[in-house]
Image (cartoon, rainbow, N blue to C red; front, side, top):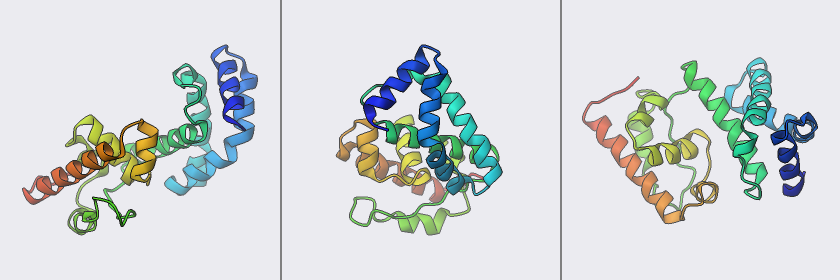
Length: 182
């Protein structure tokens, strides 16, 4: 499905025409399911969450900005839904992997050793400001690169990296001060 086709289908949904939702479902249901099952690790939960995603798409179609990259939009939506599900069911732990070896955040592996298993993901994020929380959630929770986050949020790469680095430093400080969450 092209961006133009997706935008047209969203337009149909906004007009309450279910054929737009059917087109998007037919094009992406399998991909969305794969993204979600990869996160929640339960086929039954993934099936339910995939259905939930399309219901949310129906409800929030008017919020979509045409031309903003529909594949990333729907994938981020799926990842957020799956992560929210895990958080609500206390099945997500704070786990930092340093997937980006050449970025300014190379020292996150040290934090992983210190924090892994000690802080719940949701509790750790609550200690951050909203922008930092979103960036950390996208990078750690959704395993997006800082470049992908920059593109998704339409924010300069340096700003994303600075916010991520500041957030990690804040979490390290909280951990060292003994403010454990969990």
